[in-house]
Length: 348
Image (cartoon, rainbow, N blue to C red; front, side, top):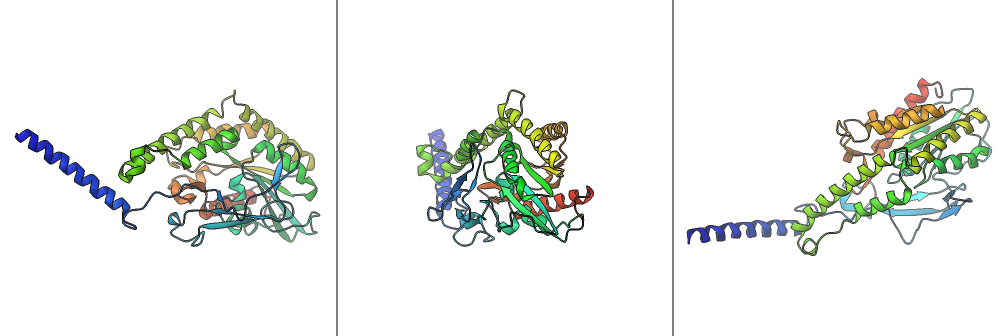
């Protein structure tokens, strides 16, 4: 009899604890609710449009805009405004930012930044992207009187497409080329997108959909497993059998040859993935692999891993649902790049 009463008391205690937890999760403002995981949800009234340039190459539609939506709940500082909106402006070349003259003005030191969504500045305002911040931090090394930095970052680009875009943009006569390299450049693009979609929309059980006290830890655990899978996939992308990594190495050689023929200095800037930026960072050796491959192609490198090392990764995210670099991360990158350019004599 006493044993049965003890079981009943324990069961009642567990039930009460679960009930209190479920109620707490449902009281607005008492505990944070899970965020809507839509870091690149595009506003249907201002959609993204691209301009095909032949083969796999594309840019954005010239003189267009598109708007992304973020959950304001994950934006306590109000960076995206009360509606969680950020609008991206394209110039006449289909690139992010203000227009520029096709023929370089006299007295202008023109810097061309190639890259993917990190360089484009997904999740940050135009003026907060590292290409825009570099313009305020460097001076022309010769007799020029002004610096002009062009942001040629395109979302979902890899090194091969960046090389093709450089060849297309050669007539604008850049004096310096910066290439932003992110470790997922060596991963198949479709696979990367699919994994990001999984991380944004983690399925939960029927019970988890009904009870938040079940659904929340279930989501956290599943997302952690997916993150580990992302790490494994990224590492596998750098094996010698990886076709994407082979493409990257070929693109490094093409970048070196193109800029060498034109007499243009070039610098590859390696960005880390913003996850566990301490002694547990799982990709340190991959940074060395990329650096070695660039050296073999004759490309100088600036590795930003140490720039971010030791910082809590989440403090560098554009949004809790989006691990692209935020305004602070872009500022740190711009500072490091400006210092490196000065050391190399490519900037005053």
